[in-house]
Image 1 (cartoon, one colour):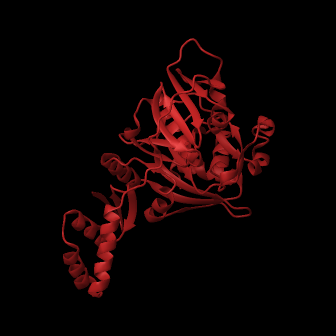
Image 2 (cartoon, rainbow, N blue to C red; image 1 turned 60 degrees about the horizontal axis):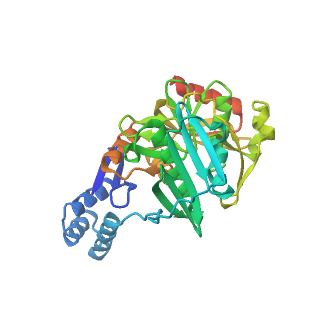
Image 3 (cartoon, rainbow, N blue to C red; image 1 turned 135 degrees about the vertical axis):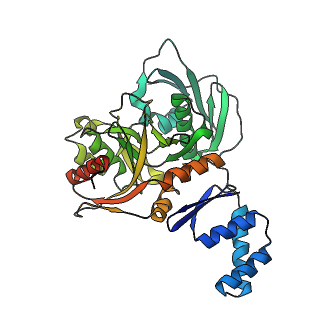
Length: 369
């Protein structure tokens, strides 16, 4: 099954089996739809030869590759293993998100370190009432995650980042009361709000997403989410995610005067991704809020470069957005993603001057470009 969306000169198709989004020529989209309808590869190869005048051997090979692409499946990253829940846990933490209270049991310091640093600002003393309980523990080379004594999933320790993603997803489900299949996607971005709408900042690690978010937060804007940005399918709204903002070591001098306590915060090392970070609590006092998003900004801090904001094509934006995102594999959600993406304004922002960056973002929110 495929979905197709024409966006000006760009055609985007979604392939259900692999949950892939591809930017293709209109002719390729036509061929994929005809393959889906059951038209034989030999017939399509002959048709393509007449259109392009390419040799039949080449067009046959091309149609065969499209058929393989259409039928390819995504690879599961979680496992279905179960395990008896330990009778004793070394660490129990209580988190409060507005009126929601979670009890999280971590078997050891290893599991605690995977989750707690970015949520430490939510910790409270043991309360009288708990709404949900999470259990996190390990056995041999696997991590196990249970919610209210029911298995959520298991992962090898080398895939601990998938466990972290699932933990965050359950947190989102319990905070906002929407199940996983109702979310359009989770984006590796920073979401900033002016109280009425939001903008997503995207880019490779180290390009300045979180640092820019921290700077904007200190200048009157609000942090909706950092690194893990959830958007609901039915309304295309960005919902708040209660984690702290991750600040890399080389950004501390830039933010020191704005956040004096950052200097003495603990550092956390992530050797797999070569990162050393500190965590800055967001200025968000309502973790249930949500805001519309009509703008994507692919940001890049480059020393000594003039502040420059330029529009980019949908093709460029999609190719940067999708690889680092989780997009729901449901057909209806994929259609909502395409509908949302079609209406977005997409930009590239290069900057070295923080004040100029903040001024550009203010103009974006004011629709004054």
